[in-house]
Length: 385
Image 1 (spheres, one colour):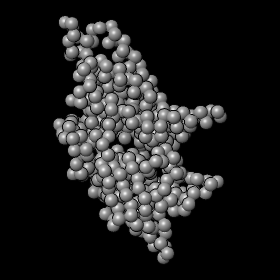
Image 2 (cartoon, one colour):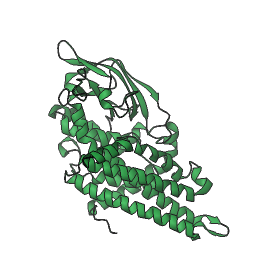
Image 3 (cartoon, helix red, strand yellow):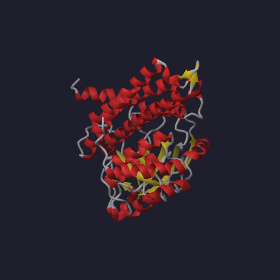
Image 4 (cartoon, helix red, strand yellow):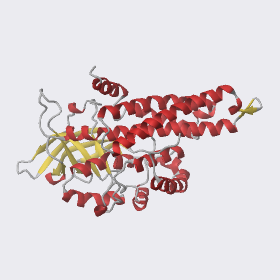
């Protein structure tokens, strides 16, 4: 079926981006994975190319595009090339919506121009050791000073993608104790300068997949954060986080679908070339049927993603819709990628083949941004169950 979700501008952008990835990323991606991070100087290249500023208004150095579909093109092309941009996916996909929605004009002029160029990389810190999906249970605190000029931040965060190299981290912290009647209240977002005294980065976490992403632990010991670096109003962070969840979950669903799309492409190419018992693996009926099933799943995911992209651009993507899209795409992509790896035989288990990286990178999509179990709870609640 012909896709109608992208226009000529999107496709021209796709071609430019595809060539950039092929020449600048694919040849060195193994080095990035071995290092556990994308080189900071590469982020400057992305800034020069305009990747970070697509949705940033022109007055702050961006392109002023309002459509999320350009990010969808990036996701598809990176997956089809079997690579990623590491922690910068959080910089744009998660942090930018908060900056655009809740920054003051002064903060936008201070932070957005270097955000666009890659001179100031952002990460967001929500998860804490022992809390997981229960954000209301966070223990990190930020107490306002007696003179009201700054907060004193104490606590720890973990699983922070992009946290090792970030220049600013949007830290969620308790500015007032939880109310038993409303555990979600009293949480505030602070844009913390990572050069601040008392701020430290712990381990760069050793993950199963997403090896090019610098994911780490963060610690705060009496870190002074100016009140002028608070994002939005005090105590309203949970409301802000909930507001951005549909886009976050759409982004994860988009990534999972793109991985499945790439897996089918890799498997199709492999079975055409691999000779077994004197003929290509593609010649066996089992291979054809397995790939037909996988392709059908990809078409279904693509249709759902395209509908969600349109809904998001029209500001009509609900929390339950986004949860359903994430649930379906992450669960089905895992099945597709597993089948495609099986068609590679023993070579599918080797990291030199992109299908192997897809397999381990995909696993986390059913966990972060809300587990599949949480997605099922949201969808069932929308059904009045």
